[in-house]
Amino acid sequence: MTETIDFSKSEQYKLSIRIDADGFSFAVFNPQNEKISYFDRATNEELSLTANMRQAFREMEWLGHPFAAVNVLVAGQRFTPMPLDLFEDEQVETLFYYNLPKQNNEWVHYNIMKRSNVVMLFGMDKSLHDLLCEQHPEGRFYAQASVLVEEFAARSYHNDSRKLYVYVHAGAVDLYAFDAGRVQLTNSFACRQTADRLYYMLYTWKQLGFDQERDELYLCGDLSDDDRLSAELQQYIRQVYTLSPAHHLDLYAISICG
Image (cartoon, rainbow, N blue to C red; front, side, top):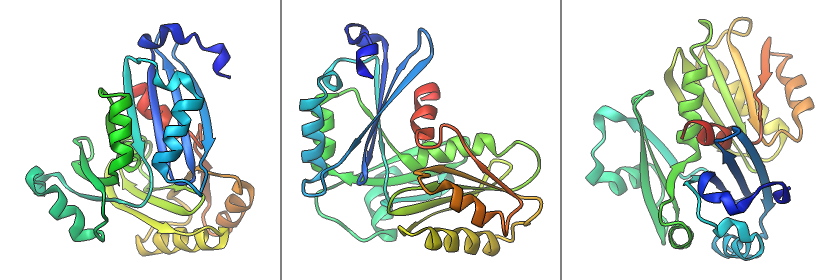
């Protein structure tokens, strides 16, 4: 609970915020004792994300405190990767909208991931971006996919098997494939049913030619149906694992390393 955190010392802490249509998540990291506290907040579907966030700042007063650093992670399907060697920053919107349909009131940004030699272009609601900048002008914005790509790239060096990392949202599934740190695929599919998630995972596994005995699949995100998902996957793939902290892996990674 927030009562256990001394927010009079908030300027020593790092705040990370994940923006997702399904809900907001917050992480407060104290570098003195390396403790991370997580908080989740459901969104009201009748309100815009901006209105939901404005309400969160009103009701969770500590969110407006000054922090040593503030990171904002934007989840969702409005992201697209491209090779770093082909990237030109003056063409960000052109490149982004070449791959994704244009939306009004959208702020488009990018993250450079030198470890993976990839640039992640992403968009978010401009009104929400402006509200967060108003509350925390020092805030840094990332696509959730950027943080996960860097985290998974680092993990993928373990042994010589190829790896498929799966981040489950309530309404989508994101897939990231790696071979010893090299990104082979990033993709996102809208789906809510376990059967549909299984289809996209197994289809991707087959399309990439992964080995059912040797290669590995890792799950994280919203794993409320984890037991069924794992059991079904293990009928086809021998090595299936769950990452920890499953629901907060991105917040953990940006808090510790960001």
